[in-house]
Image (cartoon, rainbow, N blue to C red; front, side):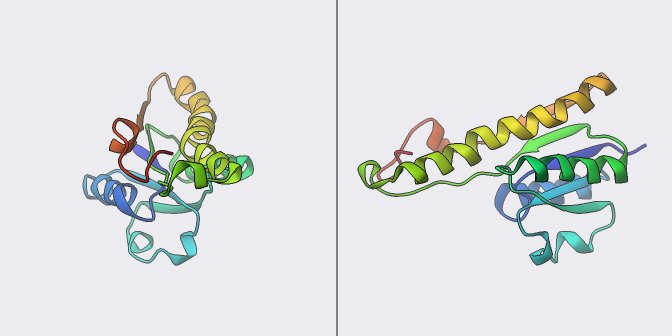
Length: 145
């Protein structure tokens, strides 16, 4: 039985590269992204399931995981890759912009992880990988958030 990886933010960047790498290594891939209807490269690959997922939407989190486990039976690895950086001077950032940044990059990651943990606990195995940015260690100009 093939292993299955669930990847958030799989429409671009590290998330998409990771989806391709796991696919090339024979894994089942659940590629989660906000607009799967726009994805053409991953959609053409065998054993890759595109699912709609905005990590700030609890209903979509549950639906994406349910579709993935229905198709592949399990989730062996979760890769939290969804996220974004908001550029600008801190004092010009609105409370809504700051909240959205945390909703995606912190709480979104936590909510997806929380939803997958029961599956991994039932399997008595699983790996969770959280991808972040160097900006979390050392901020640069106009990248305080």
